[in-house]
Amino acid sequence: MVNRTQYPITVLKTKGKKIAKTFTLGIFGPPDKVNIFYSHIPDIDEIIAEVSGRIIIDLPGIVFANRQIPPTKGGIFIPIRDDFGDLSARGIHLTAPSIAIINRMNDVAQAIWELIRRGELINPIEDINAFGNELNKLVKRNFAEFDFVKYDF
Image (cartoon, rainbow, N blue to C red; front, side, top):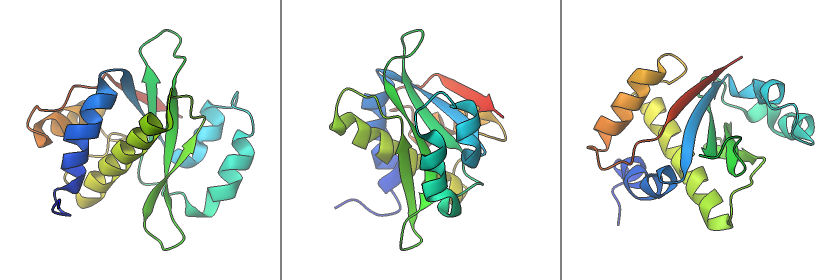
């Protein structure tokens, strides 16, 4: 059984490592403005309206995109509170090749948000380079490095 305190780090060392082999990690914020940057996504306004009162605006949105230019596969995740008030993710425009990969992306996003909330990672909206350095140190360099990208609104 995984120690609850260590769980986000374990997720990053296992699932994060697999995701990082194929996908870059992008950060954007505030997450409630995702519809401005991604206005080309069908039904984006409706998706945001559906969760608008539950979006956690002090955490970043996370984008996973494959390394093709332009990207053809990936997913966008925004932090929300679930029906019980707990941290959760809302996936938007999920084009990964399988449900298993989408679930891994979701878990990695939630692990990153949990570590930011605990103060164990700097919020990448404040400093993307420090975030990348801290993330790699936190997982003791067992983490396959993401290409960190910051999207500002």
